[in-house]
Image (tube, helix red, strand yellow):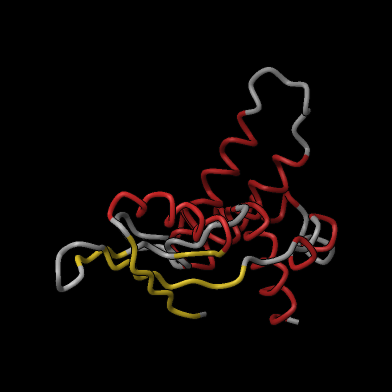
Length: 155
């Protein structure tokens, strides 16, 4: 991870910001006027974009995963045992997002409603925002990566 600082004409800030966020995985851009007030300073934390080979395929990510039925049972038991208004931890949200992703993978691509896919996407975005706000990547690929890493660390 690294910090980028750009000094540019105020009219160019949107164009520069767009180019930087396209080239890197970037956090929020902070904007400040220069001392003379004629230009704008842009600061952002960035990292190289992950390459596609950094993301496991669904088959790789879920190769050693418990069955979908087992994960549904774990999720239901976890929620049943949690007290109302309890803050749920990362493990719950990761396993839930992975479960929903696996169900969405079974979704018929030609189906007219694709509810499972939308639900999986929303759960993945939630986990991504919880873990790394501002990270720009495919949320479901991120879930697969994190799930595979968790499974590997548990074994």
